[in-house]
Image 1 (cartoon, rainbow over the protein chains, first blue to last red):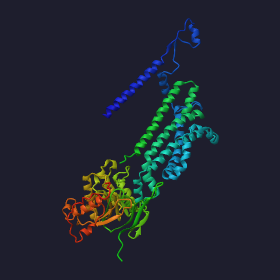
Image 2: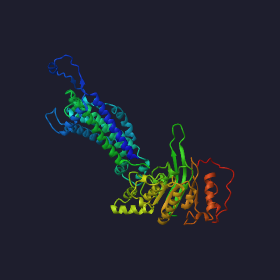
Image 3: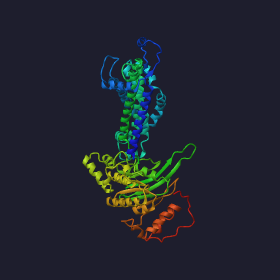
Image 4: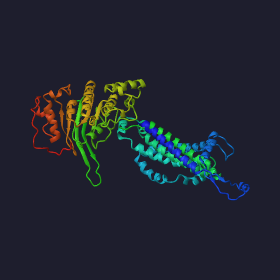
Length: 280
Length: 291
């Protein structure tokens, strides 16, 4: 039953894709232009032709852009012309570095907030104020203080991924069932063992949900951050191709960002599944 | 001077602080009772008389407002491995298998045990409750009765001096409850385990307990009577209703729950023979019962 559902859903997905590409292809067909009595040589000199290509890239253009980029992802022809693999690697590196730093801060701090009602109340106003700030608003400050564009983007990733992780960790830790804590107490389990053997596994699904949200936000923000600071990365690549007016490359990069974002989300989805448990 | 009892409870009282503009609530007060080594003691009473709170104080999970609990002459001030607790809601950790759940307790109790020794201990107690086929399953794969059995195995596996059970079978269907009661009875008789159990099931108390503490309703609940079970050991669910004491004793307990305290059973049956089964008084309940 579910097998056939999956099959049917797959067929619908593919049909939708074909319909979309078909519509796109139809909309970007070369158009016939009436050149009137213009001398064909003059028209050619003016770059005019009776058959005018569309301004929007066709599916074929995108296909060839994908092929060009993916067949040689790692080349370096100077700082403004690097393979897409390098650009992606730069973005991923910044995201992972900022994310990892955020996790190092957010998880212990979330533990503290979740365990101590005092710290929860004391830190709550700061979290509530800092959380809604657009991460890019930090960029000028980061650039001024850090004076390094790449590290500033890592900082921006750090600051945007810290909140969902911290809030979720605190929530997960605070809602560990009293029963389990009572079991640990009656077994005279020490605080360290309690934290790692009872609270952490109990809160891990919630913590990973927070990490998944953080990773999603980080991947959204890195594109904007790299557009702003330039240099390398997938965000910079898009902006650069926009300046080159190469829309096929822009569309290719948009697709790529989507695919990579999906993969990152899937990884955290799988991790979350691995640590989840069924409550009884 | 007589030797003091294994567990001695002295003037125990629990008062919850007053909510804004209200009087503080004293749930129970002046509680005195004793538990001898190897004794199976049941506490029965209606909801809200603080039964669970008493058990939590004995377990060291809750603090009394007044009074003391002594265990082997030493005051109980906190939780400890000398007392095993079977929780009302089994309290198994759902991310661990049966084996890991019991091993968690065994490792906490026997810190120097090798892996093999821990495993042997775990398997012994899981086998005791008849769950060896399910030993590597997670709690959500088990039925309610099986989960409660794991809870019992976990409490027994640390070989506590006293076992504390908070309505362990409350959430189970009658059939399963009967089966586990039989198992528990067999295990306790074999190990001479000291047990303090809370229940509101009169038959369960008669089957299992050597001594039954009858609690009045809260607030200001008290232990009104400490009734020794007149039914001879070994008791069994199939046979016990043939004992001449069964119906008088059961009626006595039921009357207590419905009508409140009356003449203690020991005085009714002062010569050791069961008193005649009386009709319940038709005067109606003296207290509003919220059973």
